[in-house]
Image (cartoon, rainbow, N blue to C red; front, side):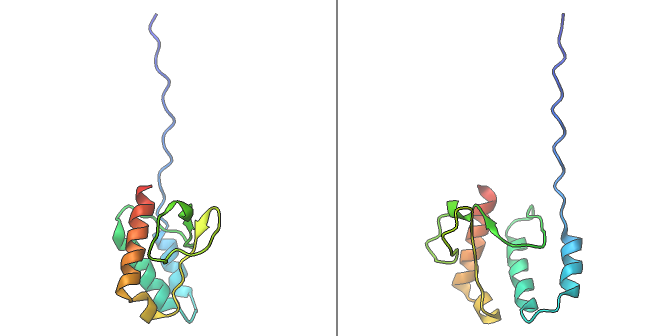
Length: 108
């Protein structure tokens, strides 16, 4: 008697919430809105498969090796990145460190 292998459950599709993020950003009234948008664009441009939600936290950031000092904090499950203003966002070394961290984070 032949057995039919059980079908694997279909993987949940990854939902890109870019439209919701766009709506959120359109309505955002914050003194650092321009800086937030600039950081968002840096991250989105690293990898076309990156999806968006409203929060930006490097979950499991503790596993990322970061010698640049960009990822801060000694939390067990995350690291934080701080930008003080647009000039800080545009610092080439900081931008390169952010791109490197995102690339590594996506590949983990």
